[in-house]
Each structure stands twice: as structure tokens, then as C-alpha cells.
Image (cartoon, rainbow, N blue to C red):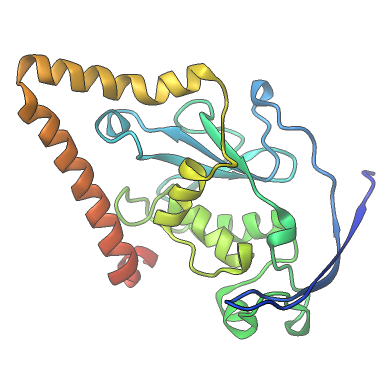
Length: 242
């Protein structure tokens, strides 16, 4: 049996929405991140999508890894896969901190400020338990790139554990977390090339054949995607959660 590391957290309440942590919780020590073996314990992982990422390189596919490093992802209607990343190897990852999660065993054991809302939304007693619970839920959902995708699955898990004291995780901030957070890492130089070379080649080819209007078209396409996801996330929540 693996040894258990006891973690004592005691943080005072601070202003501006900070929340109190006063919990003694057992957390399994994590193994090392090993991109060669595809092991990313407690990491949010990202890879580019075929064709779509060639037009908008910030669009990609995400998954969340269990404590043993296996990737879990929502990759199709009624389909949640484990340890089989659908669109190739992981290109970028960020390891998340389990100490920023709320794992209540009862209503009185909440360490976040959303005690009742968190309970109604659904909670978990561990990192892996949260992933398993969301997996069961998304095994009965239809996949749609624009309304219910891999980012929705990850956001559901992060809200279930109230990661970082927040229950407002959605497709937009999940993408920002893995792509733009300074703690994120590219697997290697080849991963960067794989992510941006197709877009660069397509842009150069389009400009050479069509001219600058092609680049303007690509930019317009990206802006439309950003506008749609922003509108749907903040104004059409029922559609996104359906």
C-alpha cells in the first residue's frame, strides 16, 4: 500500500473573497510527471485539434488526469475515455494543486465559502472521486464542439471540487488556465511546432494565393469563435450546461 502524506492546512480568512481552509486531509503523494510514458498526475492537459486548430490555434482538446497520471477526457457523445488521449499526445500541461480543492465529507466539513451551493452542485471526497463522478455524468451527454465539449467536462470537475475557491469554471477560463498560465509547460519543442506550424503554413499559403484578405478572414474566424464562446458562456448558460 502506498504511504499517505498528512497535510495540515490552516489559512486565515482574508479580504476580497479569500476563503478559510482549516482541514486535515490525507493526500496520496503523486508520482513524477513523465511525458514519455504519458503520465501527468493531477494535470490539466491540452492538445491541438485537427483542422480546427489549423484555423484557430488557441482551440484545442483538453483532459484532466487522475492521481496516477492517466488522462480522462470527454471525447464524444456518451464517451469518456481513460488513458487514451483522442487527438494525439499531450502538447501542453499544467499541474493543479489538490490543496486548492474542497473535499467535504459532510456539510460541516466544507473549506470553501460556497457550502450550500457546492453541496447542491455536487461534491467529491477526493480528486479521483470528482473525476469518476463527472465521468458518470458525461457518459450520458451529447458532444458538441460549440456547447458541450472536453472543456465543459473539465469545468464540471473543477466546479465539483471548487478548485481555487471558485465555482465559476467554464470553457473560457479552463482554456485560459492551460494555455496562458505561467505555470503551464509545453511537453517539448516538437509540441510547440505541432501546435502552431499548421496554422503558420496555412496562413502563409493563403496569403501567397489569395493575399492579405485571407489573413483577415482567419482573424475574423477566430474573433467569431471567441465571441460565440463568450456569449454562450456568460449569457446562455442553460445551453452550455445542457
